[in-house]
Length: 264
Image (cartoon, rainbow, N blue to C red; front, side, top):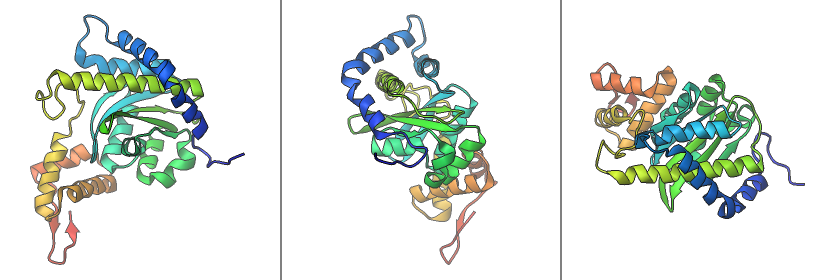
């Protein structure tokens, strides 16, 4: 018998669910889409209706959908509750967490016991998530081929694995979420900012603007400037959106002294 670290989902359970996707996921995904895309409903509400349906169909406490780029989380599309919103904000602020890893490797990240294994893998994220009452996280990448679209994040306030059937159901919801994101982006890709008509809860425009300012002030590349913002937000315990506003207003400034040390 192969031993595995405590607090991680069994690989054979996930593989079993994946093996059944060709026979059950497409039909179940179509059923989910037909249920959430009710006639007369606003198209922009599709992501919110999907996360609500997902939370009702699975033994989880909440669900969120986040947009992803090659650089990491880019915006939150829909959440079922404040804890799910905290989950997504932590991952954006810190640049680490299950959704970041799931998007990067293109496979689900299953953490049924965050207290047992989370701190060693994502020290900053795990601390904040545990404080928010989150005990298990299941992140499913939303991709079309090699293109990153987003991640479907499921969480619950108690530890425990998902069964084979529950994993298959979560994968069906992930397929449905991918279809919805593609559909909304295809309607008018030039409308409403970088994500077209996608209903981004917080599009992080201020964070991107502040990143540019920090890049100039500290004389560092944009990637390092974002890392500086994230580190400062984590150190002070402030949401990164608040820190970004302080940078834009001049309350907080970063500089690079003559010895190359970053000050902020």
